[in-house]
Image 1 (cartoon, rainbow, N blue to C red):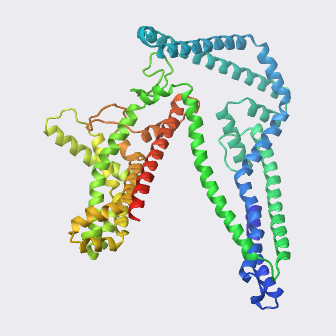
Image 2: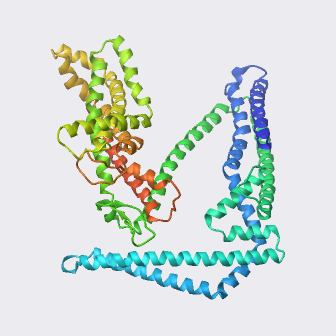
Image 3: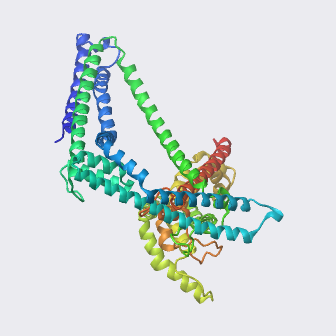
Length: 566
């Protein structure tokens, strides 16, 4: 058992003891006559227990969150300070290396050429009237592709030459008797990001006594440094937590008396905790929005916003060679928007009528026995994993649709289509509409129904003219929740609609959606500096804006009709 676990158990004991001591001391301060206390004895116990445990556990939480990063930063700083002399030798070697200088010059020239071509292409894109020249634009794009490939090759050559010099300097330093800690710091300072992360990961594993992917004297030296810092910080955190717990216990114990306002203090602490929880929720939302916004701005710095929002071709692949298709990337998101809208509309056409009519029947017509059986059975649909729906769409619904339309004379029908995905997705979200609408309809006051019947209205007239308008805000909320569920669905679309970004209005063709493309762009070995990966954040920002607009519409509808029927 680690020292942190022992301290946590000790703090739990101190919290229990603080509650008992605070309660007992409060009772003793009025000689057992609890009527003389300003607050109930338990509040005094809560007050002592809270200040005994909360600051200490907060410190332990900070250690759990940031302790590993702090240890890593301290170890890296110490190791790199040991490698100052080797890094200086590397800098001097690179400055004096003619091949490295020449490669750098070539890469800089090609980079400037690419920037110039980008500026020329942007100028032609913004041209109007007689200044438009599509042929010149195509020529510039071809030149841009060639320059990009040459620039990429030159930069790879610069990196390769630099790594060769780095390896040479490292071998020379090791031969001259450089220490393992210095070599570890040198490797951390000069390795690429992926290799640096692997080095640190292996060092942490060795420090914990686990099996690493490789072993070397430099790794063992780094592991020793990490283990030393980790031990110091762990014991410091444990000791400080115990000190905070003991200090909180002693201070609050001395405050306990008959006239001490323990209840007010406890309620203030609870209010502060609720406020902090609310602030955390708000800050989390703000953090999500800002992360999407900043990464989207990086994407829009290389791809124009209008090209992204109104472009008709989606092909985010960035090729390595000039002869590859999609080498410069095409980031027109209209096919994704169209595919998402088509599948969502098909799903809502299926789900809204069935879900709403089933909710009306269950709440207004069905008997109690049938309702007790039918509603749980209907809600089972919400518990089926989406991958099962995807298999069902791929193996049953898709082939059935293809066979039906082929028999009707349509020859180009495919198994993976927007219609197949939309139908199955609509079945999946029926419970979202039926269950929520049923609860909303049942919440309409019975007095409204009785008044309608008293005026001579029939049951159907009462439902259409009284119950449904009164329940409209909740029904709109249920439908928008179902729309959000449909827009955010991924697995069914991948398996039932395919992954091709086709701009089509034919539901019998395969399409893709925003969420599917986000998953494809962010999975696998990707670099977060390329437009291909950054485009996922731009798509996420679009989804966020769409969801925000739907919520605004829902709020407006609720506000309008709530004033009428409350």
